[in-house]
Amino acid sequence: MTSPAAIPQSLSRRAHALRGHVLRMAEIVGQGYVGQGLGISDLLAVLYFGELRYDPKQPDWPDRDRFVLSIGHYAIGLYAALAEAGVIPVGELDTYGSDGSRLEMSAPETTPGVEMTGGSLGHGLTQSVGMALGLRLDGKPSRVFNLLSDGECQEGSTWEAAMAGAHHRLGNLFAFIDCNNQQADGPPSAIMGIEPIHKKWEAFGWHTQRVNGNDVEAIAAAIAAAKGIADRPHAIVLDTLMGKGVPLFEQREKNHFIRVAPEEWTLAKRQLEEAGR
Ligand SMILES: Cc1ncc(C[n+]2csc(CCOP(=O)(O)OP(=O)(O)O)c2C)c(N)n1
Image (tube, rainbow, N blue to C red; front, side, top):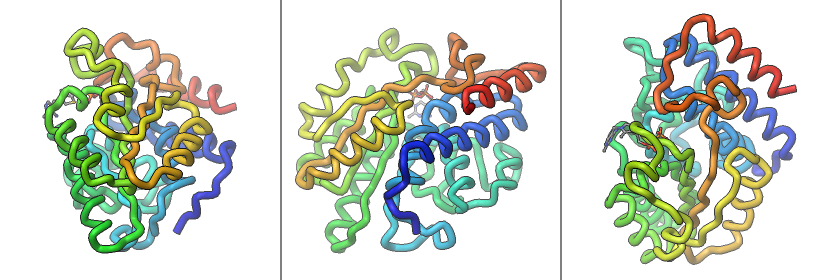
C-alpha cells in the first residue's frame, strides 16, 4: 500500500515517467489520445504516488480508494499510471489497443485497477456518487476520486450527479475536471461554452478550487485543502495543456485524436527527454 507522503520532486519524476509510458503506447499504435495522456500525467502522478490508498498486488482490496475514469478514452494515461504503480506489468503496455489485449483504447472494468468501463461519456460522476454513498453507508474509510472532462460538463447526467453529491454531503468524493479546452470538434467555447465552470460547481454546493493541472505541487496542495472539509464533495478544476511535455503535440491545433507520422516519434521522444532534464 502506498502512503500519501511523496515529495513534489519525486512526483514530477513520476509524471515524467508516465509521459514516457504514454509515448511508448502511442508510438506502437501510431496515433490516438496522446495529448490527453500527456496532459493528465501530473494529476495521475499525484494521485497514484501521493494520495491514493491501494495495493498493487491486490487491486480489488475492499478498503482501497477508488479512481474512477469517466473519460474512457484517457485510458492511455491510466494504464501508464497502473504500470508505473505495479498494478499491471510495464511490458504489457506494448499491447495497448491491439486485438485481445486487456488494455483497450477505452478502459474496461475487467482490467486490473480499472473501476468503471468507460466509453460512453457522462456516467463517471453518477457512478462515483453511488460508490461514495455506498462506501459511507458501509462505514468504509475509502474515498472516491473521479476524473471527468470539460466536455462532460456539457452533459445533464453530470449535473444530476453533482446535485446528488452535494445533497448527500459526500465529503469522501473528489471530482477533478480536466479543462484542456478541447473536445472532439474543437474548444468547448465554440461548441457549448461551460465557463465560468468553477462557479457552477460552487453553485451546486461543492467545495471548489481551480488550479494549474500541470503543476504537481498545486494539485497536491488543492487535495490537502480539500481534505480539511468533511461535509461537502470536492471539485478541483484543472487547467491543463494537451500534449504537455512534448511541444510537437502541445502545438497541434486539433489534438483530440492525433495522427502521428512515423518520423515524428523520434522528435517527440527527444522533446520529452529534454523536458525531463
Ligand atoms: C455519450 C457520448 N457522446 C459522444 C461520445 C463521442 N466522443 C468521444 S470522445 C469525445 C470528446 C469529448 O470531449 P472531452 O471529454 O472534453 O474530451 P477531450 O477532447 O478532452 O479528449 C466525444 C464527443 C461518447 N464517447 N460518449
